[in-house]
Length: 367
Ligand SMILES: Nc1ncnc2c1ncn2[C@@H]1O[C@H](COP(=O)(O)OP(=O)(O)O)[C@@H](O)[C@H]1O
Ligand code: SF4
Ligand SMILES: [Mg+2]
Image 1 (cartoon, rainbow, N blue to C red):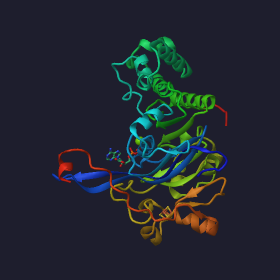
Image 2: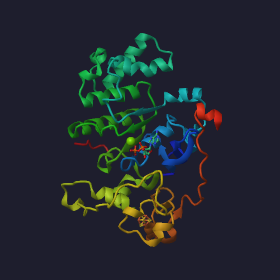
Image 3: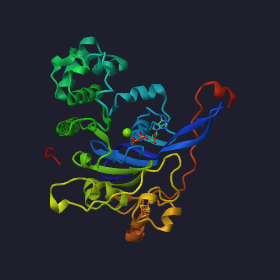
Image 4: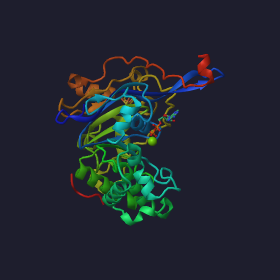
């Protein structure tokens, strides 16, 4: 829980997604990729939570799992107070209208053989209940909202620039008037000059239509403008989460400090000395014992190699600042309130697929 001031529109609790690795003629599970490992957060209506971390830490899997595009291994997903982790396909189809996603790659995610109209209206056709002229009107209105000329509807994706394509992707997500949108690295594939335009568009749309966002990025510098809260992820786990001002102004976890130190700035008063992390991100198939970050942490001690730190709240009950690091315990003593004390049970492995083997077994604009 980030803040008790607003009811969350979306809340995930102890979300786990393991991808089984199978080998042999019996497709036996020999290991699991710990892509998302006990992640919990809330996003209040109309707000943005940014999920940040290096490539492979589980951001996309978190976003797709909470939309049920990927089945969770375990955990709860509350949308508007209802647990949708086990909702049926037909229940999820009704919810798809409210919960949308914008993918990272505006080139790969648009079918080159479809016109802009057929791309944007696809969701309306799947939902049903709209006449052809209603669909066309909605497509034109949504393109306009997203800064595109409605006269473009008969064109094909290759006729657009990267920024325009991403606007089409945003229009496709918004045409059904969703309440919650996962933005999976929506600006990573775009030129720097276009990135600010798309961020401004997303901020304007959020404010105008009271949208709630999960904004995924590998870069802390791009999420600052849009975020209300920021969660930093490392090897499938959240290591620090706080409101934007606290996370950028007072980062406590050594990983967050390293990510922030890598942000270039022209203001000498905001410049931080660069923390260069040693080594690579370990494999999520066999994460390190103790604190997952210890092989790269400049402050690691013997305890960090053997014992896993819990996520503790070093903020207040109303304004939570969660940190998963023994240094936070030391610095904040008993004021730190443990958030996840219960030892997590090994999640039930996902069901075997049907196959042969189965039979056997602020308002300033960004510049
Ligand atoms: N379908 C899949 N099968 C097996 N492993 C996967 C699958 N999808 C993602 N992974 C693995 O899960 C981990 C997290 O991936 P992902 O969520 O895409 O990370 P991010 O978005 O942070 O870059 C990675 O190690 C990735 O290789
Ligand atoms: S628990 Fe230890 S290894 Fe992990 S981040 Fe904190 S100091 Fe570093
Ligand atoms: Mg990703």
